[in-house]
Image 1: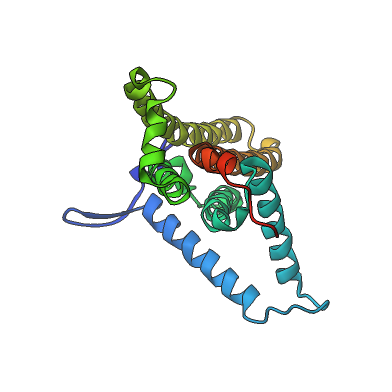
Image 2 (image 1 turned 120 degrees about the vertical axis):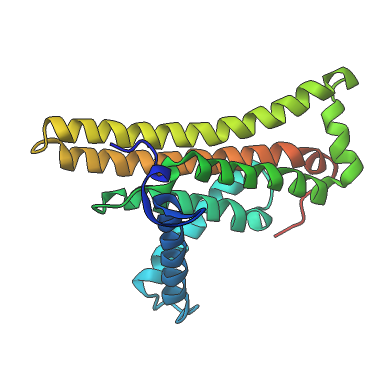
Length: 230
């Protein structure tokens, strides 16, 4: 049993290697782009919605409400980033029901890349909201003595974000493989359902933590300036 999809090599030429992580990551991106194009090419604002548009609007509205509730701010600015994180991770985990598929979120390189995206997005949103000087001053709060500890905390939570998702997906895949090898006729359906639920929960937790970090970087601005009216 391969612990990580990084170890599954489909093609190599010298230093170039096409492993399962890269292959299935690109397949997921192509799938999401294709589905989005199919759903939105005949998008309409009247009451006669297609099932795809209806499902997409429900998903976007749920993400909108969650971001608004967690961040206590207008969610339009954060919806594309946080929503993309959730949809990508959820799709990567849910497709584990397809035989032969290897979830790229079971690779530490994928989860580290997603965590780095959050690590970069947090100061960008914070600076855009607060300004450079006000944002940087937060690292010296409540006293300048806390500056190195706040920086270490910023780095450690990014590492924790990557390891948490990788560990949960990898361990779930290993447990499912062990149980399927022991009792192949009883556990497949149960483990597939359990894996789908776990995958959705992990995508939700990752998106929520990303929004919490962004909200903590922009909360000073919220206190200083009232939000504009709808």
